[in-house]
Length: 131
Length: 105
Image (cartoon, rainbow over the protein chains, first blue to last red):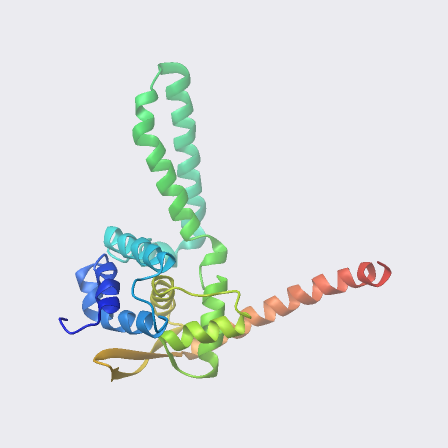
């Protein structure tokens, strides 16, 4: 690790955002890809590369790399409408709470839940799943 | 199938490739329109491997770094062929409908 050139060290700092288990298998491989794509006079990771590594690394860390789960992906034809349905139901609950019970504080819980279900639905949308 | 998956499978249909080889081939196939980043590439490779469409082929060490090659599986080739047929049919339908308009404009 210590004899990497400065650019590779900087790339590896961004790769550190990935979970340790992932890095054990993939860090060298991804560092190789990043270094092959670097310009000869490049000294720092490009902003888009860093953002890409940060987004995918953190998502993998948050989800353990299995998000949505393989089971959910395998049953996407059923789970896609289920997730959309849950999101719509939560929207209805939110509207009822705000409209009739001044339950705006519940939105702190419900809005993230709605967004999460919509995000999962987006990830397992029919066009995204390679059958 | 996502365009990224389609392009990666297309790249691997020609030969087994390592990560950077896939990036350059995908850029070439797409006429430079799709420039995969490393994080996006490896997320896609993991998805395709989990679905059984690609698999690791061989490994070599270059500059003290692991270089892993990937190849398309039989299932991946079948899936790519299905998707290519579907896209061709869609494109044919679009062009068939556009031709009268294009011819008269």
